[in-house]
Image 1 (cartoon, rainbow, N blue to C red):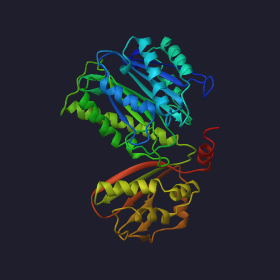
Image 2 (image 1 turned 45 degrees about the vertical axis):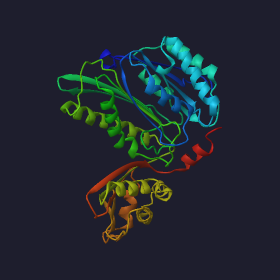
Image 3 (image 1 turned 90 degrees about the horizontal axis):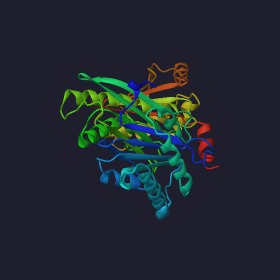
Image 4 (image 1 turned 90 degrees about the vertical axis):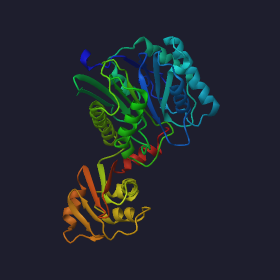
Amino acid sequence: MKKTNLIEGVNLSSSSSNTRYGKREDTALIVLDKNSVISGKFTSNKFQAAPVKIAKKHLKIRKRKQKTAFIINAGNANAGTGEQGKEDVKTCCEEVAKLLNIEEKNVIPFSTGIIGEYLETKKHIEALKKAEKKLNPFNWNKVSKSILTTDTKPKLISKEIQIGNKKILIKGFAKGSGMIRPDFATLLSFVFLDAKVNESLLANIHKTVLQESFESITVDGDTSPNDSSVLVATGRSGKQVLKNSKELSELTDKLKEIYKSLALKIINDAEGSSKQILVKVTMAQTKKVAKSIAFNIAESLLVKTAFYGNDPNWGRILAAIGRTQGVKSVSKVDIALNNTPLIKHGNRDQKYTELKAKKAAKAKLINILVNLNDGEESFSVLTSDLTKEYVSINSDYKS
């Protein structure tokens, strides 16, 4: 990897704990130089894993003038493990703090995997010690692979952008393929940039980019107790991004592209999926109604299984619209499938033919366009079909 493709101030590595995945690397260590700015967003689920609780606490009290470490383990969510789960996380944080000569509160933990099992702490600490010896700025691909669970491929992105007269590098990776219906982010997501951005501004940027990416995807309607998204600005490029500036707008737009790309990679790798489905609801009275309809369609098991079977079952789509809170009538609704008309004003379109509709339903990328003809608001959700393979994966997950 060329030096120009590196984020200065970020060193990372991975190792194997030799637990759930055998010799496969499943433990990652990321070390940030001092003065790095961090924004963290976490699961809205009231059932929160031990590492999430501690990560939220440590991010609030960490010392900016020290290095900060992220520790990540895959295979064990450390959720539903009570006080023992918290103690296990604290032990890992303490050991890493000693390794790096920093305070425990500067170690931020993340976990993903099986719920309800205790962490094999000693093995993970040994893995973190091995990872610490291999820290360097080049290990992006290895680390992005080490955090995977049921994913079939890593989700890694790198982009150099021009902001004003300075080049800024953005790199990030994510994991997630099931239990995806986050209200803020995906299972785990880490994005880094070398611009200088203050804490409140970075938090606002993070919130904005999540709304149009990870908050607009769903695989199965379930939100994990471990969902975490982190955005880091190291400031090492020297480019300062200020509030209400042209540079802020440009950076936000570029980060939206990065996050949307990661969200798309997650849907492309959704558990057992064979198709992507984009649901776009337009001309709604309110954004809230548009969003509710889009998610009702995207999360309908009947809609998802119909498309798995190449069935253009528009009745299921219309039914999902009709049961949405805030919808008083479907008499104005138009629906098209990959530009093929299905519904006009709540009834079968006169141009509808079963042959054309079935052909549209066979596509690997399905676009469902719903026009409510009732206002000016719109919302889009990206999802996948529901296959026999999804059922197989999730009925046999722990074995």
